[in-house]
Length: 310
Image 1 (spheres, rainbow, N blue to C red):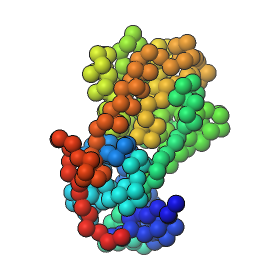
Image 2 (image 1 turned 60 degrees about the vertical axis):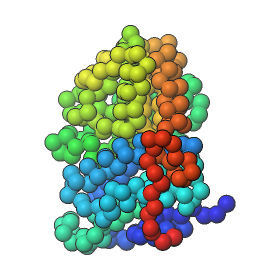
Image 3 (image 1 turned 180 degrees about the vertical axis):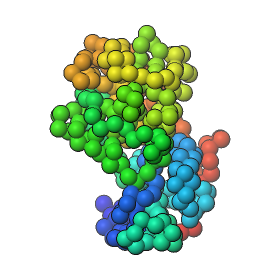
C-alpha cells in the first residue's frame, strides 16, 4: 500500500516527511485549533458543521486561517481523494505558526495548516459497543468557561489528558469530567447522555464542547420520538439513569455499562441507546458531502477543487 499523504503548508507530502518547525506555537504552546471529521462510504459527514466550529474557534482565539472556508472544504475533500479513501478519519489543524520562544502571537507571521487523513480510527474495541464502557469520575475538573471556553476545540488538550490519565490508572475505559460546580461536563474525549423513562438528557453546552455527533444524536432522538432535553446533570442523575451513553466523531455512539462501579440499568445497552446507535449508523452511511463528483446526489455539495499541488 502506498504511503499516505498529508497536507503541509500548501503541498501534499508523504506522511513520513510531514513536519512542522520546532518554533511553531502549536507545538510549543498548543496555540491553535483542530477538527476530527469522519468520511463514510465516499461522503464526509457533517462537513459544514465541522467547518463552522473550526472557523468559530479560530476567530475566538484571534487566529487568521489563511484559507477561505471554500478552500478549506476543498482541501478536506482532497485529503480523501489523494489517499483514495472512501472511509476515513480526517484532521485539519490550524496553528498560530512559526514564531520564537516567547508567547507573543504577533511573532507568528502566518498560521500553519496541516490536514491528515487516515483510513480509520478506533477509540474502543468493538466488543465495547455490545457490552458497554466502564467509566470513572475524575478529580480533574473541566476548565472553567471563564478561563477557556470548552467550545474552542484547541490544540491544548492537557486538561482532558490529565483526566484520561486518571481513568487509565483506574483501569476504566473513559473518564467522566465534572465542571467547577460539580455538574457533569463531558467525558475526556466525548459528550455524555443519560436516558430516563425514554427521555434523553445531555448537559447544557456552556460547560461542554458542542460536539457535532452530539448535535446529530439530539436530532435523531427527537426524530425517533424520544424526549430530548439539555439540562444540568449531577452525578446522582448519572448513577440512577436507566441508560448512559457517550458520543463523539471517533467514538460514534457507545453505551456505558457502569460509572464509579455503579451498574447502569441492568448492565447492558438499553433500548433507547441501541435505537439511537442503529439510527446513527444509518445516517452516517447515507448522508454527507461527496468526496468524488460522480457520487453527488440531489442537494449535496459539489466536488471542491483545492488547486494545490501534490
